[in-house]
Structure formats: C-alpha cells, structure tokens
Amino acid sequence: KAGVTQTPRYLIKTRGQQVTLSCSPISGHRSVSWYQQTPGQGLQFLFEYFSETQRNKGNFPGRFSGRQFSNSRSEMNVSTLELGDSALYLCASSFIAGGQNEQFFGPGTRLTVL
Amino acid sequence: QQPVQSPQAVILREGEDAVINCSSSKALYSVHWYRQKHGEAPVFLMILLKGGEQKGHEKISASFNEKKQQSSLYLTASQLSYSGTYFCGTESTGTDKLIFGTGTRLQVFP
Image (tube, rainbow over all chains, first blue to last red):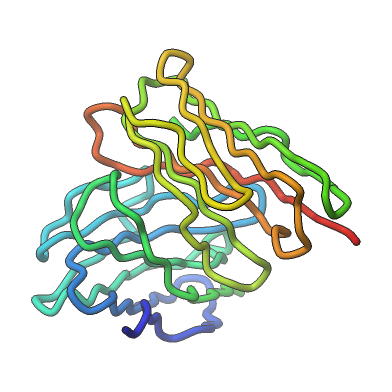
C-alpha cells in the first residue's frame, strides 16, 4: 500500500508570491490534515478536510487555504507569501475524520521564502 | 490550547530509561504519541482514549491521566533507534481536532 505523497518536496519562492502544495492520501483514506512545522513550534494545525469539506481550522490567517477533491487528494494554497511562512508543511491522512484516529504523515514539502 | 511537553530534550545512554510528559489545560478525550526522526515524517506510536487502559508495545508504553489532563510516554531500556523527536497530540473533549505539542528531542548514545 503506497504511503502519503506530497509534491513538490522542495520549493523556493519570494515574498508576495503564492504557492500551491499537493497531498495524495493513502488509498481509502478520506481525511486529510495539514500542519506547519517550524523549529521550536512543533506541528501547528492548519486545517482538516473530509469528503471535500473543511471540518476544522487552526489559527492561521486567511492567506492559508485548502481544498479537497473527490478522490480525496488535497491542495493547500498560501497567498502573498511572507518570510515567516518558511517551514516544512506536512499533510497526514486517516481513514476517518476526527482526533481519535491514527494519522499517517507524508514526507512534507519544504518551503523557503526569500 | 497547545499541550505542553516536558522535558524539551533528553540525552540518554543505551539501556537507560526515559519519561516524556504531556499536559493540557483542557479536558482531554484522546492523546496521540508520534516519533519523528531527523529528515523523516512523524510516525504513529499509539493512541490513548479517555476511559481506555494504559497502552504499550515492546519497551515503549504510555499512560493517560484524565483527571490531571496529562499523559506520559515511558521508554524502557532505550535503544539507539529511539532517537528522534517525540510529539504528543491531544484532542480536547468536544473539539474533534488534534493539536500537537512542541516536541521532546531524545538522543540515545552508545
């Protein structure tokens, strides 16, 4: 069974640009969550999607948005990039939604904003 | 809302034991534990649910004290492969959302 895949693995952007990250969950998993990981901050929850609907959202500005497609693949978009957006962005999939289920993480997308 | 983990870092020699704590200011429904090795994705260790029993496998186990809103991860007779950053994730009652702590970095030396 293939694991969670994320593309691209690395991105370099400049301030003000926008970026789209992609996540393909494990086959059969319908829930996808996104996290931002920075040194010292741990894993900061961005949002969770289940069956194409956003179920939960973290405390991030509106520049961070996401969506989920009918095949459960998810994309995350960050507009008007800031230097502080430089981070590892991880997505995780689980069979069903909610905080009681094991999450399977992808390898992440390393975003650098110059 | 973010759970607090302690200690922030632990240095061990092979064979020594360690305890990592995770505490929340809110009533908890579940606690997750994950380990992330350098340059890799976090990997699931275990989930503890409210009303559930202590869990563990091999030499890694965990407990969940609902009244104190705390969980502890126990690593017994540590091995080099235990090195990494350990994260607890907590789901507060009624939120259905998993929030992670800032992590505890564990290093095991021969």
